[in-house]
Image (cartoon, rainbow, N blue to C red; front, side, top):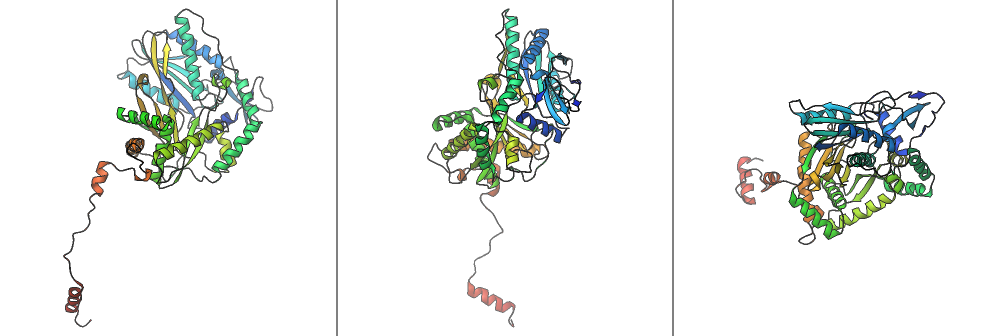
Length: 484
C-alpha cells in the first residue's frame, strides 16, 4: 500500500488483461494531465498527528484491510495499444513504511519535509504504486500518519473515506469487537455508474447547461496578467483568521440565510472584480460529484471542478451578490457530474487549466479517532496549482477557522501572495459587515490599507504659485518681449 515499486506489466499489445476496465471520464482527465507534464505528480496528500500509545502493527494491518475493501489502494494502470485501463490487483505488495525521525534535530520539521519530498516526487502511473502510507515517528508515543494517492486512483472524499474506515477497523480491534461491514462498492460498480451517466438524458442536459454557461467565458480570470505551467510544490500563506472575523462570518450567514461557502465565494468574486476591473468574473469550484449513496461510501476518482460565472456590478450590495452566488452554485451542483475535461472540450478552449481561481471550502469533520487517540486530519496537498486557490478549513479540534492562499510560485512571489492574503482578509471583513448599517455598494468597499491611504491622502503636488491677473500676465509678456 505504500512502496513505490513496479506494479507489474504496464503495456500490452492488443490484449486487455483479465479484470481490467476502462478509466472513467474523471480519471481520464487526471491521466491526460499527468501525461502532459510527467514531472509534476497529480497527487493529493494528508496526514494525522497522533499522540499516545499507538499499536503500529495493528494500524498497518487496518490500513491494508481498508485499502483492500475500497480497492483503490490496490489499483494499477496498464496501457493497451496506448489506451489506459485499470484493474484491482490484490497481488501488489501490501506494506506500510515506518520512518524513525525522533533523533533528528527537529523531528517535526524533518517529518514535514519528508512528506513534502514524497508527495512532490515524480512517479510513473503505470509502474509505481498509486497509493502510499507511512508512519513517521517524531518522538515517544508521537507519530504522523501519512497518506498520499495519485488523483487518478482516488479523490479527496475517497481518501477521507479510506482514513475513516482504517480508524474504524483499528478502534474496533482495540476495543475487542467486530467492526461493521464495509459498505464500499466494487470499483467496477463505480465505473458502471459513470458509464450509465454518460449514456443518460442527464448527461445530455448537463452538456447543454455547461455549453451555454462557458460559450463566451473567454480566457481564465486571474489576479495576474500571465500564465505558467503548474509546479509540484505550490506556495502557501495564511493561517487562522481572527475570532472577530469568524463572528462576522457567522452573523452574515444568519442574516443572509446562507453558508460559509456562499459568503466566501461572493467575497472573493467581489475582490477579483475590484482588483481586475472586470464586472464579470469566473471562479472554479471543486465538487465531489458523488450524487448517490453508493458513490459517497466508495473509493475511486469521482470528483470534479466546475466554473462559476458571476456578474459583479459596483452598485450591488453583499446581499445581492450572495443571492447571485447561491443561484449559481445551486445550478452548478445540479450539473456537477459533467466532467471538467468535457466542459473544456465542448467550449473548444485551448487552455488546460480552470476558468478562474479555485475556492475550496472544506468544513468537513476532521477528527480521527484511533482507540483512545484523537488526531486531526490535515490536508497537505490537493494537487498541483495552476494559478491560485483559496482554501478555507477548520483548525485544531474545529475550534478555529483557517484561510490560506495556495499559489503557483512562478506567478506569485512570497510578498505578492502575502499582500493578497492580507488585503483579501481585510476586504472579507468589510464585505461581511457592509450591510449592517444600511446597504453599502460593493464598489465603495475599501481595498487599500492604512499605509497606502497615507501615501495618497491628502493629495500633494508641486509648490503653488502666487495668484496673478490676466492684465499683469499681458504686461509681463510685453516687458519680456517688446518687439513680439
